[in-house]
Amino acid sequence: MILWWQASALIGGASAGLLGVYLVGLRMPFLSVGMAHAAMAGAVFAHLLGWPMGPVAMLAALGAALGMGWLTSRCARSDLNTITSILLSFTMGLAFLGIGLNRGEMSPLLSLMWGSLLFVRPKDLLIMGALAVVLGLFVAVFHRRLDAVLFSRNLARVCGIPESVLLSLFLLLAAAIITTNLQIVGGLMMYSLLTNPAAAAYEVGTTMGRVRAVGLLTGVLSTLGGFWLSYGFNLPTGACIVLISTALYGLAILIGRQLADPQR
Amino acid sequence: MNAPAGFSKGLCCLSFSSSGSPLSQSGKNLHSDRLVWLNQVAYRPQRNAVLKAVSLSVHAGEFIGVLGPNGAGKSTLLGVIQAVIRPASGSVEVLGANPWRMSETQRARLRTRIGTVLQRSDFNPMIPLTARNVIALGRLGRRSLFAQLTGEDWAAVEAMIARLELAAFCDRPYRTLSGGEQQKVQLARALVQQPDLLLLDEPTTGLDLDWQERMVALIGALAADTQIPILMTTHTVSHLPANCSRVLLMREGRILFDGPPADALTPERLGLLYGCPVEVVRRNGRCFCYGKERPDG
Image (tube, rainbow over all chains, first blue to last red; front, side, top):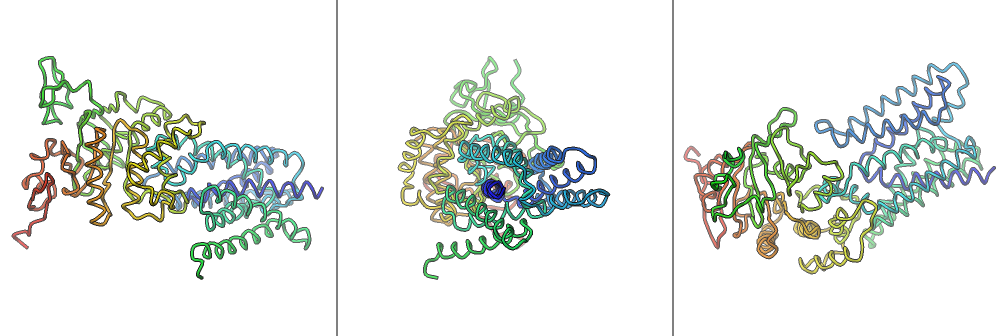
């Protein structure tokens, strides 16, 4: 069983690390946390209503992703981060409302909030693996176009790159991956796993290829390291993963400074 | 046969043949080489009129300077031609097609035929793309969505690097380049698209004096060498190269004047355009405009 858990940590860390490179690069920090919390709210209400949690969580995350994707291209007057943070607080409010209304067993809901590798079943692992492969292929095929969108959406548009199509496809994939990875770190800490490895990668990466590689590697180190720390000392997995990813980000800042100015 | 409304109202430099086809001052039939036609185009985001009944046509070989103060609607005009801004009313025809009767993918393909240099600040400094990577973006749109860049694309990129003398900094991260170097890279990126039309949105804004002059000289030389029709916006009269063939004066979303530079760049017209008395000095075909001290101080 421990092999399954390690495989989950490996796949989850790799896909969240790589996905985060794009979510952070889009400069929409609330996008990932908004999707994570929408997925959590969806799962909580699915549990309350006796519906299957996974598909409902994914639908909620997809809805949030498309809604926020639409806002990024249409919303002209209000600050995007303000709107996405309002959506974030709304989805978090929904999730906590659902938890408050729950009169049954709490452990499935708590696992959604805090996550645990121990809840990952072989079927989940297969889905996570399949989605990681899809993400890898998506990045392999579209990496230059995605780089263009990250660099400047306006520039991508005027170069004739169908950036809204690409972005919509990417957000759909992101929603699916975030939902399946909720089980590892939980809705509350998913944001860190999407942000910290990617932020570390941008600190040290001098090309987009290196940023992708470092993001993926830092994601894997965070989840595997967090798993071993949690397993060894009987600590919550999600918290351990987040703490390790934060420590790696701190290390990346130091390395990044050294790379930028070797005389320091 | 009546003349189309856009021609009769908006284009003071055109006349009409007996058949109704618009003629240039040289008597050439212009429909055959018309690349852009805007007829009574208006754009009103949040009920704030940015473009008001603008009519314009652009023909092969023209180098048009679009001059006006900040907020005149110059960049919006380019956005309409680029098919990134959908007008609230009026007709738009770009490279022989109405972009708003196309799918998003078809519109994206149309944009590959239009090289655009955006205003300087519009990029994410976090993304570590080199100047060469940025130039190569110009070739991406030309390929189908799933296709990768080919050897031919990279050869075109290298040729453009050599042509615009970018070799000294083409492997440096774009974010570390000076403003002038960035604009030169953007020009290379637009040209490597091999466009049918080039749109330059304030390419000299924010550059130091040396780079302003270098960009003006480069744009002038490109217009002369390539014969690609160019629309260039600026709010500084002296940034129009000497070989600019036509000038649009824009203010508050309207085209106040459309004609040859000699007629457009007069103290009276520029004074009206900028809302203050100006003095105009012409040197080597270029025009320099200075604000005059107001009589009331």
